[in-house]
Image (cartoon, rainbow, N blue to C red; front, side):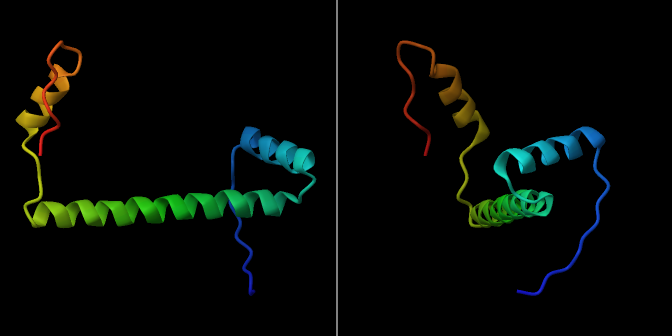
Length: 86
């Protein structure tokens, strides 16, 4: 796999934590950074996908009225909670 060096300035306390993790895991600092960056990118891609799905639901009219959701939420601590709005 081809690689590319990426440089970033990070706060000293974060760099120290990375160094501590690297020592504890007996891995190079670069491996720790690559794992963290990969996990973050995966998470951001999932957020983006879910956002696009949510916007498509709105465009298609698949929404629940805010007042219905609020009434349901308000009822949750009562003796007779409302059914989940649909």
